Image 1: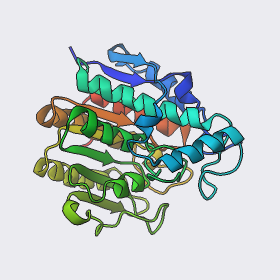
Image 2: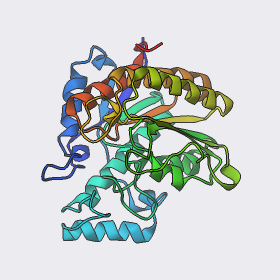
Image 3: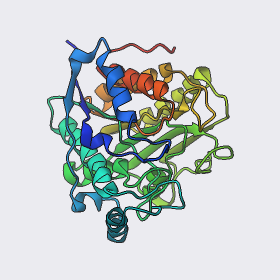
Image 4: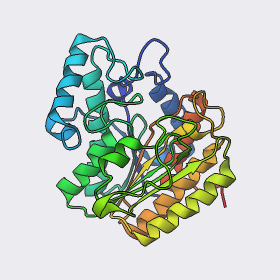
Length: 320
């Protein structure tokens, strides 16, 4: 029987979203759950709630000064946490803390077993830097999870793979000089899309030089181009077998997203999840954690994230 997948979800996780028509609205969670519930694989899904992350856990990645800033902005309930993309609202500190806590729930589950695969839809907030918010991202739960994997579970090689349309700059620069963190990111070329980073030449610094892989994609790139890039990611992982795999499943790389310019179908996400499931069995005792991240066309994100969960169970890839 296929192994179950944990999906972290619930009202407290859905609370992370911005009001007044913001692209990252709080409805994204429920749209995904409705689609997931229609999946033929739903019997292999175990839903679990998130929890609040502690301040100590958030500070695995973020500076104390920045955590103070978010807490005060949340209490004030107005203004911006960055240059304008990420507004403050009453309760944003707790909402962001539930995202971090939810990702840590998923990490603990797959590290301690018996289930070794997990997915959190409102997670993978990859733009937040150690000391600032950015691009709809308040706390970088991916960064916290990577730090936790190394600090709490003693892992020495963690791989982060990102297929969101935007470059995962918060994760990249947060670990740019850390050779323990493998980073592979397929994203729209930064000459055409925020945050403007992630060129081929960015491969890590100092002791981590050569441990990072950035693959910029031209606007309009579809599944065939994705598959070619993905083969490069697999070769990279084969040369650097990890002890844990993290997949950022941003659905804004699908055709029809309102703020990006790539043209994948949900088959790209299904392929990535299926192959990482298979590679996790080969490299890291089946441990793989998926995070939803971006995606602003609601139908797209529902389909892409559901295909990702199905890929973590036993669905075959539709790309060859």
